[in-house]
Image (cartoon, rainbow, N blue to C red; front, side, top):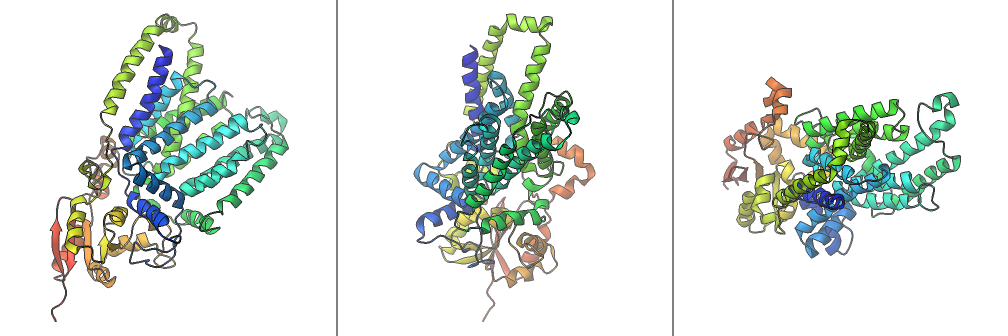
Length: 527
């Protein structure tokens, strides 16, 4: 019965995230797919932008170039649904690998806590390349925890870093992980012996430290083997100096900023308390303690990094449960559990089967992602508006001032349109030396002469969000409680004035309107 429960929990750990991912649509998926198509179909690598009119013909660096090509191959040969499956498998493997790395015998208990952690972080799940990041991170941790002493094992890490750098720009986290291990390996060599007992860290030979420095050098060199060469480093490092987008893109805002996701905050806070206690009691290594603190801090600063605290929380919660079990050996309650464990396993099997069936029914099977009304309803792209504009323009080239969050969607669904901006330019694309393109886009819409500035870009169509709310859906109780009287400041869409200015300008004609989007066409002046 225990083995059956293990396999059913493993299946549930796959079915649950697949149900979440398959009902999501990443706003950047369109431009990922189009770039992958360009790599596959063009005779030379696409170094220049051909999707926007603001940066048309200018070079740009795509730090997800390999992932885009991979997504396009899966999309064209297997279908969109298999992208959901592969992304989900990557997430499940990350939890299994971290369990193998940090838990002696990852079994039923670990799979239970892995599921709990996924339930807490499910709002991050979507069919996007960032979902592979935790898999690469888990692989590096596994090598350090289990195979660092084996000849050649550490040499796998530079190749993992190279593959990671081809898929997604979060590869810089790989170097952070390596340097945490490096710093903690140095600690016993520089701290006095009488203090070493407080760190619960084994002393590794200096050759291990030299190897860590060496693999980072090899990894850094390998990463430059890409279409952009050493410029890929420049692109990633620029993200650290561009802070405007971090305050305006929801996933890059702090975890305590609107909107708040209380489940992951509660989970990682409980885990933080447990690991601090475990470190004080010398049950937790300084390396593992440092790991969690680093990723806890990252998750508090950036919402999207909470997936890593969820990943690391699973083994910590599992260890805590094991220690509690050991201390309950003499209690009558523990003896009762042992006597009836088969019945408990049976209840677990029944409950798991119920959950598998429940979430399996929620899995959304589709390959026609662009015409799928369920995905359109759940994720609010301008489905009908794009259908209209495609027919209205009859495929003629147009310049479109667009809602920023729809840029990636438009890149694929409306290829005859050059947009003002899409997700590729949210962080590092600059309008001038001091102002990013995203800042220019947001500030331009808020100015009194916004219509005149939009017209100055040479656009002949405008597509903006219709509703009065920036974020769709009903706000949570936590958001209402935490933000109180200031709630409307976060929820109201301030673009209403811009729409009124466009309507009142006399130079634009509204040609389409639905519950999501308005479209205006430039009125040519009379001869």
